[in-house]
Length: 263
View 1 (tube, helix red, strand yellow):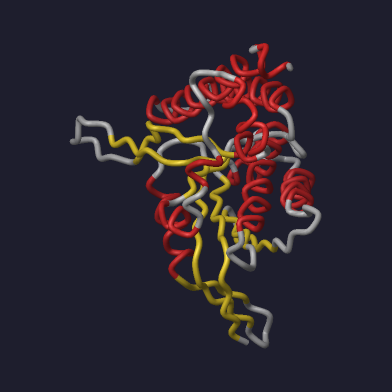
View 2: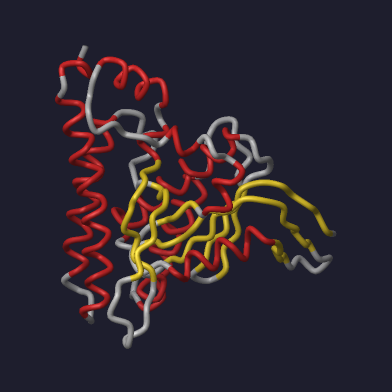
């Protein structure tokens, strides 16, 4: 059966999957891996579904309404956070949008096809760090996301009131100007992409204080895993990720320290 769907698609590469398979406690860790994904997409009012193929996860929503993107972003944020914190597995991925097809065969096989699938996979493969990017194609469908994610540099009462009215979006996404993209060894210039990323955070992360506490744990975990990375280029991926998350944490720490936020 062929079903045409319009919606949002997240493609996640589970970078530590080989460690799950090689670990003596494979069954226990694999069950935890599946449970984290299954429980994280159970958001009230959402219709998220997922499929797993070895080290890849596809999560998709039906419908292009903004609430569907928020549910998907919330799920991806929680999955990214919990996989790293609970079973030391980093995630890289992308979220795209548009029309795609789901094929269900009589013998139980399932396949996805369509432009957002290709787009999400392409952007996932291009990134050279540990993060989830919201692709430009998605922004074509939700241009308002440019405003929803904004964290002001200069704090005043009007800015604070506007920021509070947009929650939880500013806790879920962040504009990053230096997303590392893959390059070959004979190219000396870094390939840096400016885009909107999903911020990894604890489940039901609805306050800056909860996000800040979660980011501290996440960064500490990344710092420990960096020491286990076998090559300098692998360590650099951890460094680039920690740099970005430190910027997010510091900005929120500054915001909530302002009297205008406390009042």
